Length: 206
Image 1 (cartoon, rainbow, N blue to C red):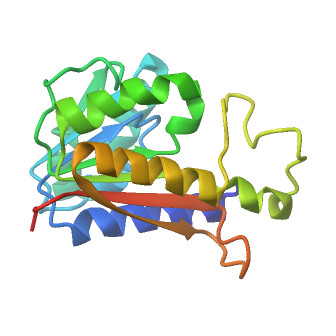
Image 2: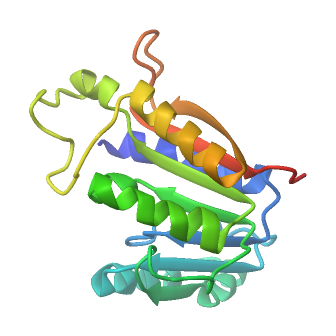
């Protein structure tokens, strides 16, 4: 993915966090902090937690947070919690956040493990809103990705929009959420954008 696609994706997720009125945010698979450094500048966010299995990624994330130039934002960034943990093994420790984010994470899991993630996220953590992105395999030819390959060697799968929509619908139905799907990064009339986006909202939540 190009830096332009990454920027489009981060801007879209950032906007959704603000639009849903979140005060507490959980970034699952936060990596080196691309999104956390954006969220740390938002005064309305009272608690931000980033989880990742990689100690190296968390170190990079902390370094980036510490390097934020604005003194007020840097003070908020210092309060961002970084936790080395699996997003499928946290139980109810992080239950009830306003918003949980999974940005380009699920495609790094074996598909057979998605049911474990579903239980951990939608049953145990149960945030009000979940924002999830993953590559749109339909768009791969426009990125010159060969048909027999994924966009990244660590990807375990990449879904087209129809397959992704079926999975999103099933997760929402099983866990009493409402969900919508769209794409980000390019607007091909037939294949959509480079990135798929799903937004889950807890049924009955206002």
